[in-house]
Image 1 (cartoon, protein in one colour):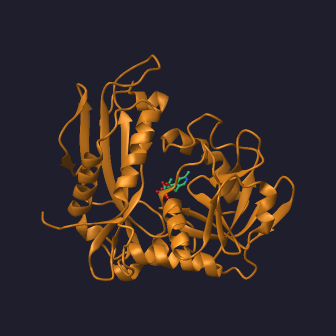
Image 2: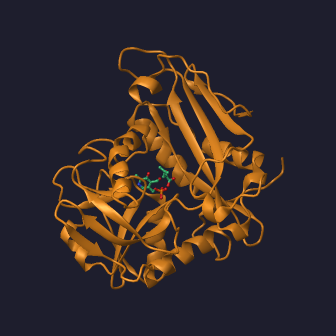
Length: 343
Ligand code: PLP
Ligand code: COI
C-alpha cells in the first residue's frame, strides 16, 4: 500500500486488491468467491438498475494498540442487512455467511488495514442487489452479494477535533411515513443527495431532516443519527423513519455505563434549545460534534458549541467507543470480533 496521508484522506474510496462475492441462484446462496476484478457484468434489465433493488451495510475493522485487528459488531450489521433485504423483498444472507464474507474480505486485504497510529480504519461495505432481467415491477430471482473494503479517514471534515455546522431541511424528506427510512437501501441515499448538495452549497456539513409526517420532530441526517446532551442525559430520536444506527445503540449503552440517563423518544425541534451538546453519530461519522443546527427557513440557530470544540460528554463517549474499537479499553460488552490471520 502506498503511504496514505491519513489526516487528509477523509472518507474516500481507495482501491484494495480483493473483493468477496456470493451469488444467489435457484433459491440458495452459493459459495464465497474471492475476486480481483472491480467490475461487474450486469444484464441491462436487472432489477437493481431500474427499480433500485439494492441494500448495503457499513462497518469497520480497526488495527488496535496491541496490533490485533478487530471488527465492530458484525452481527448487528448482519441483522440489519437481513431487515433491509426483507424490506425490499430480497433473500436474506444468513448471519454466518455474512460474518464469513466480512472476515474473508478483511483477511484478503490485510495490508490495507491502516496502522493504529493513523486513527484511520478499514471500512467494510457489504451490498446486495437483484440481477434478474425484468420489466415488470417485481423482485428478482437472482442476486449478487459483494463485500468491498477501503481504508478510510473521517467522514466529516475535522473528524472529532472540531465541531461542524449542520442545517435543517424542510424542503426535502429523506424517507416517507410508513416508507423505507428504517432500512439501509440505496434508494434512501439517492433521496438524500439533493438535501446534501444544498447543505454543502450553503457551507454546512449536512442537512438534518424533520419527521416526514408532521415536520415537528428532528430525525437524522443523510448518513448519521442525532443525539443531544442535556445535563447528564443522552437523548436521541425514536422514529420509524430513522435508521437504527449501531453506533447510536452502542453509545446509548456506553452512556448508561458511564452513569448517564438515556432517553430515546421523539425530540421536538424547539427542544434543541435545551441541549448543551449535540452530535451526529454513525460508523462513518463516529461522533461528529455539532457546533450548531441552523433552521434556514425560520432563520433560527440552535448552538451547541461556542468555541468550536466538542463538549465534555461528547468527548467521554467518543473516547470510550474508540477505546473499545482500538483495543485500549476492555470490551466488556462483547462487541468486537478478532480477526485471526490464518490464510
Ligand atoms: N443513519 C443513516 C441514514 C446512515 O446512513 C447511517 C450509516 O450507516 C447511520 C444513521 C448510522 O448507522 P451506523 O451507526 O449503524 O453506521
Ligand atoms: C456508514 O456510516 O457506514 C454509512 O453508511 C454512511 C455512508 C452512507 C457513507
